[in-house]
Image (cartoon, rainbow, N blue to C red; front, top):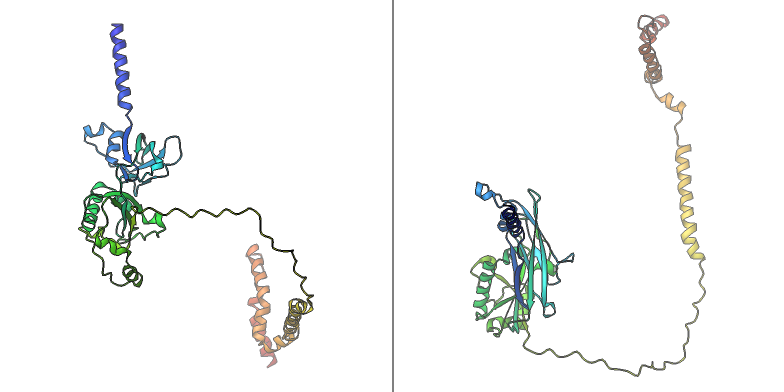
Length: 377
């Protein structure tokens, strides 16, 4: 019985380890071609709560993806990551160069923003040598697209079919997809109808069509600079948001060998004789007295004049207390002089008992003034 219990325990531990540990995700891509890997939220949703679907509870949690190369803080130089919103899928995309061949292990951390659970996954990208030679490459600008909306495979197929009609061949491969923001473009306004724009580069082993060769003519460049109607635009698009901007398209013919850089001319290493060094003569003497007058004397004179004007206004133009009282009516002067006395009397009345405080004198003043006026009359 003990042996059976130990075997059952071992089988249980192995099964639990098999369920918890997932194998790495292997991906292979050739150098010189676009690599795209989509991180689906629904796949990781089942990883966080695998048993909830049996009970009829299905969540749509916001998730944030964090990607980096294993044992490094960032991604490889040829790989980029984008995710517009926590409720949308993420994308790893890029074009490896021949010098980037090898195995790249990418760590993907998924954070559930509702429960704050985390999940880790490893993506192993094996970059191999170039499989196809694409000496003819063309880059097109799609103005009404964003990078997250172009990376899905179905949208890439729509764009490829449109370029296939323009190029005249079906042997096309995506070379690169770049956001206009990475090319120095401006961030669009957060309003409907504004997009960041996307550059799409495709390559083929077939030469360019006659229509595409118009991009290199001088007439096409003049029309684009003038900003008028483009006569040579022969592009077609089944979906209006996939229409390319003809003036911002470019062709790259890699079939022609590039001329090597000129070899620098090697000299003797000895500088040529330039004669004896003759230092420049001393500058002539300069009289700084006019500068002193302008910078010191003139400002001081202005300050002195302003001080005299201010002193005259403050001292000589004052009216004086006697003249002010002579022009002020007696009743107004009386009210002015009695304000402070009235305030002091009110404080005195408020601080003591009303029964012991004398009757306010100011109430009797009008009666005394009336009696004096009657006596004088």
